[in-house]
Image (cartoon, rainbow, N blue to C red; front, side, top):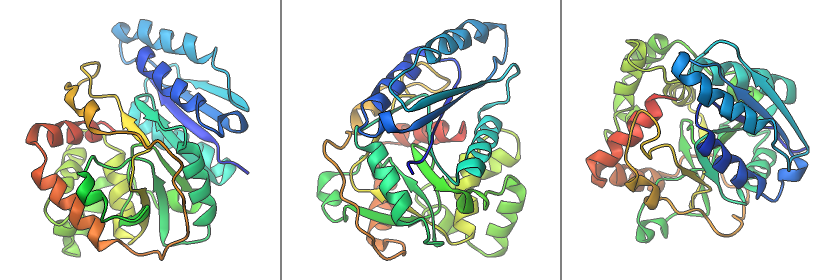
Length: 299
């Protein structure tokens, strides 16, 4: 059975339409059930845009079925995702998750469903991810078609009920364990990416990121996420439409143009991949990394 797809939307009708149109072009779209969670407006200014999105999603076709959940009040992205993912994964046992600013390759659903089937009984693996950072081609050549990294991620992903059951919503508890086990340097991708600062800001109420708690939950349980060498997701949320601006990022991630062949590999972190990504984080333009961090902090 194919995994249900869950899409979280809010107040960006153009982004939502692009996300859905790319998803409709996926080879398994017509055989997949789509669940859409529409959060309520934060204030009077958001009412019109939220309604535009809702008018659009009610007309969506191209899937086996489409179910829409509209909230009267604003839950916020974190609470919306946590409750929505919990609801669907508990009913179906597995889930594919997208937000309203993620363009998918036509091969995205195939990759996710195949990987969910292959690693469904591998308890070491907590999730599947569709996005990979735009590292240089010469470095990509050193990577296999798919590989594992410790932790979890948030830009086009999938998991099982057994994986999501490990999600710990208490950021303070996660940080204390990281400190007690002296894992902060490794948690920060060997000092190349300020994940621990994101977690501290979440604890302080300066962001409401579910994603940093998802990553920490998986990391502390020594769980792995499967990544593709070529990206199946392009994030279009950094284009001046949201809180954080900057459209140069959009040109940096190319979508894979052919099917990714998945074969079962040992469930262990790829040391070479981690070094390559750490090098990317250290060498990337500070403005780009800052925008990515800001974007992830909202999730």
